[in-house]
Length: 209
Image (tube, rainbow, N blue to C red; front, side, top):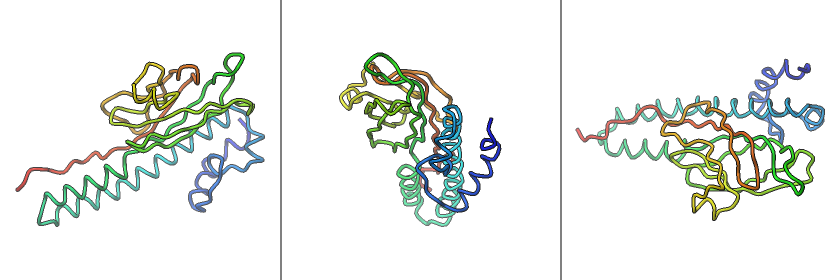
């Protein structure tokens, strides 16, 4: 791999310290991005997802410690439980995903540009899946619920839970560093998807004392 790949960890650390925004993963400049191969761009996108997930996990650990402290000091356990639930179920439930593969074009299937998106639980949103050469694009709808992430060609398909959708994950327990799954959004996209989701590991005692 090129010299850029060898220094990717240093680059990620520098970006984290500087807090600079970039439209490309890991703060890579447009000129560097254009010189990279497709495989290098995919790797950079996946590394950015991992960096985002690690940072979110550290922040969540701090919030968990604060929630534990508030519960131990609270004279009303029920109130502390409500505060904990609001803290995590409203701020901690989101999926950070990358999809890559092929998209439907006029004459068949063409290579798709890697798409990175973040979706919050209970807030479906639209994404755009574009071709590698920039000539083709499809819109799709992504949703995150308690069972996983779905990618559908339309909101109607999402509402009907049709077989045209791609179930990125349908398991009762999410893991930090979700497995890579293969699937297809009918007549739109086919390939792989990987999502990272963090949920609170500690649950307060809800029984009144």
